[in-house]
Length: 336
Picture 1: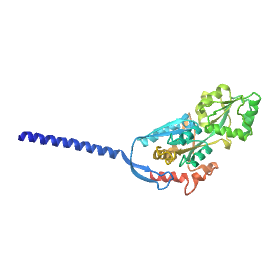
Picture 2 (picture 1 turned 90 degrees about the vertical axis):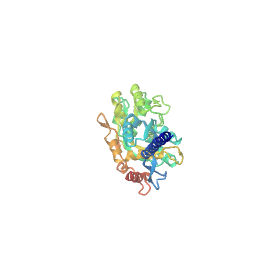
Picture 3 (picture 1 turned 90 degrees about the horizontal axis):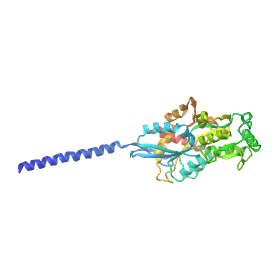
Picture 4 (picture 1 turned 180 degrees about the vertical axis):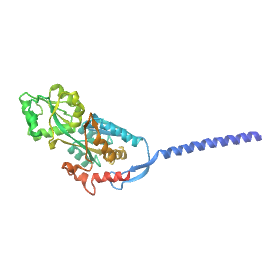
């Protein structure tokens, strides 16, 4: 009987050790899953850093095609996920118009776009918060080397578009538009309007309904003109027989802005993670990635966080001393 009691006692002791070990491991795991992470309000007030759980999150971005086609987002994905391993970055590359619509439906957490009017409406209508400009490049007008419209000799972009219109009407030129409500397409339409002409419905005016790289390929096949962001053209220039015929006009300036989707309108979005990603874009590390990113020796983007005034632009939404978004993100970075 005594031996039986001793065995029973030993069994209970060993079982207690096992259960205690499991409980200990559980709490250790929870500690490792918990860390200082940002807790934000959508209006930017009372920003704090609190102890929150590091649950694995998929950050969904709708981005303009140029950041995807050039490979820049792939570089950001790797660097960001190395720094925040519990966040997986995914994106869909679409035109700015489509990206804004995805944001308006709450189907993504963050949009990265390049059409100021669309962006301003997205924010003013309450769909986006804390939008900030983080990079820029410019547009270029490309076409066949023989340049049948004589664009090369034009004094600026408005005259260049007038010449293409006139050549198209005479059967000498073709223009391929993206036709997809992208930032590039919207800029192109505004340039036709500035030139005082309307090419819609003309036989020489082709709407591709495609992204930038596909539009370049179509323009190459048709020996046509098209408007392209410089970064995408530099990546694809060796694949097409098109050349830059007009560049350098201030109207070609192309700004990129990142805008988190408003969590007050869509509580399901990953708002904190969006702010972490945008903060990374505008951080010294992120701006260095942008400013030094090249393809075959060509620099594709320029940095401009907090420096839009050097481009002749003052936007109170971003630069107001008390409520501007530049100040907001600088405060976030100072707490990280």
